[in-house]
Length: 308
Ligand code: CP
Ligand code: NVA
Image (tube, rainbow, N blue to C red; front, top):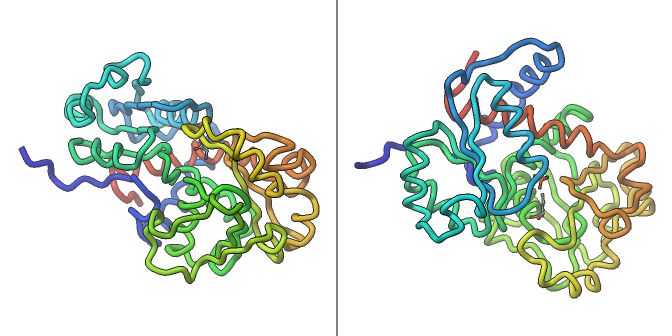
């Protein structure tokens, strides 16, 4: 039977600027209630299935704790302990799992895999990280920026390091929310506008020198040199990325009140100096906590739509 149109969150560009205004406002309310120990349980009797084909700490804890707080429950599956690891076709898995739960979160490799799942799912699907995108992380990062500095529109974000899933998602967000991304990557690891699928290159600028990318930035951010799934390239990447370590010099040329973010896990002494990530401009712990608050708003939105 034909699956009716379902709202999924597979990449940042699945939502409009207006959706994000709603989600950030809603996440702030949900966070406030959490801090006040006030119950907020719109998802009683709803179940979230979480499928992990890659490791996770933050994504698992934030979705699992978040869903329980909303009154629902979770099912946790990994490649190793489900038939996914034994080559059950993704569309069969989607058909089966989505008959029993209300919402699915997937962390996997190729974006085409999550798209294949969503195409056969009866319920909304959320991207918990693919090789190409990490929309829930950027949702949390922008929410964190707004909490500390107000609107991100018109601001400059410096991306230092790999042209990876995080970088692609920042590019999508810049076009939707009206800010600029300064990207500096080693050669061979550039961002690819066609992966981000953005209409133009107006919202981002490419710099050879990471210092130049950071100059005047309102936010400096980076990520691991080697993402999950690329471990075979580890040695080559360590050599290529040596100059792409966010240090106090880079923070010095950014705006005096620039924030530092990292989605974590981090490697001090590789992509970031300990002095920066553990320093006064770093908001990485707020960023991690905010995953839970924004994802609660996201799950509520996908299942119940906009609430007053
Ligand atoms: N930032 C992030 O997604 O962390 P995990 O890999 O621990 O889920
Ligand atoms: N780019 C990293 C992010 C980890 C949360 C990865 O894909 O491994």
